[in-house]
Image 1: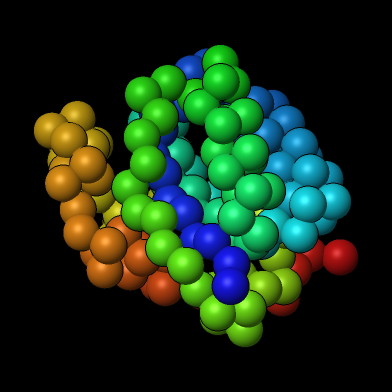
Image 2: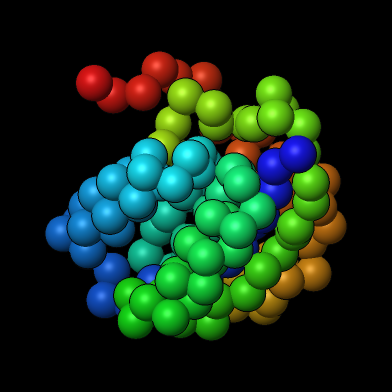
Length: 135
């Protein structure tokens, strides 16, 4: 049994260099720790899904919550999943710029992600195009 966890945060100091640094760190650490997942990102929102061994996912979430590149970090969902039920099994960290189907800036400001149910949050990740990891 694995843990699947989602959270939302607001980026602090968002630019392409900051995002590149986050993705580099995430891919290195996640590959080491057996974690897979995806990050939906834009200048007002990080929405991330992590999946892997429970202790590793919880430790990763704790590091993210303490990272000054994230503010207002809040857990949205947490559930156990079967070993073969990873949504992003081939990705140490899939990334995608938030498209129009992700909550609007006004919805994020109004706290919609915090009130979203598990199916709505996970639905955001299910909408990501299927792609093979970059070499």
